[in-house]
Image 1 (cartoon, rainbow, N blue to C red):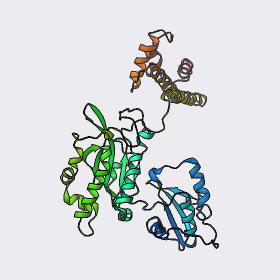
Image 2: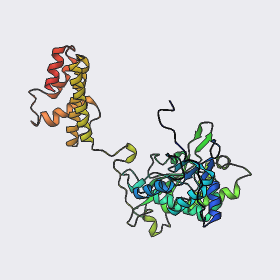
Image 3: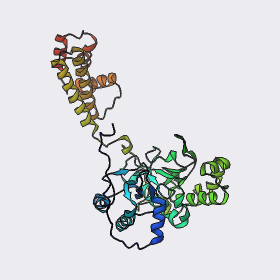
Amino acid sequence: DLDTVPQPQPQPAQTYADVKIENEQHYQHWLATNVIEQKQAGFYGVYVKVTVGDIKTETARAFVDAVKPYVADEIRITQNQGLLLKFVRKEALPSLYVALNRIGFTALGFDSLADITTCPGTDTCNLGISNSMTLAEVLEDVIYHDFPELIYEKNINIKISGCMNSCGQHGLAEIGFHGSSVKAEGKVVPAVQVMLGGGTVGNGEGRVAERVIKVPSKRATSVLHYILNDFKANNEVEETFHQYYDRKGKDHFYQLLKPLADLTNLKTEEFVDWGHEETFVTAIGVGECAGVVIDLVATLLLEADEKFAWATASLNNGANADAIYHTYAAMVSAAKSLLLDKGVNSSTQVGVIKEFDNHYVATGDFDLGQSFSDLILQINKNEPSEAFAKAYYAQA
């Protein structure tokens, strides 16, 4: 039902004040790379490139205040970590550009080679192996300064993840990098795995990038230079990057990049990751890609409490079988949470029951008058009667 969510409402037609555009050439590039004409006559969509998808809270508030007079009352977040402003009237484009430029949001090349998608990497994620966000910024600078003509290239995307998990979608990019490490001179060196040839091909189809070679992270800029210079020199007329990659073959790129994998000529700075000053070390823990970082013990206790509440409701409604099952599940969750508190992690219900007996009942920490196994497995030995449901519930 399209009426469930209110549709965005454009600003009313009005006369906008004349504004002075300091750099007309930049404005024209912005119109070409960041603005699209909507199917609704007279309206335009404006894409905002957000470097590494990161906006501070105070900047976000300033952004909303800046664009509010010119855009519909809705801002969308794009899949490549940018923003989409909708229903901008043509006559409002100069004013919107000036407002965005004033707060630093007119970077060119939305969804182009210069618009790199990245996960947070080692900045905030414990699974990150090497840095991804600073690397993305550095590679974007390389494109803007050394390959400025490619800000219009929307058929090549670069995506980066800080580890092998694909939060940064590196496996679905024409040029992908994921964090890794290599050993040299008795030390660990931050590295990136180079992956090539992935991406979407249209009609709802895509292709997965191939792993080509691993190089020290500080050489990722050279990887980009090697690949783009080779592409510019050797691609045929109107040949896409996918066609060029398939024609040249994986080994061509392995041989092209092989000199960059040589670890016999490492420089001191290559033992330090992007965005860091200290010597690189690997430290992996629970990652953001697993979801919100949470206290698992507390979560299991909350689950136990919730399941016990379900058992109470089922008992009150006369649903004896449901009450018995929810009582059993609540006891398993509570037991598992207590086991984690002792550093014991079991992935099966049978294992949880056994280990709880070993670590709590046998030690005297819990006096149940019987083993936990005998208590909880009464579920297998009794019919789901009202009397058993109430007794089982009371024991839990």
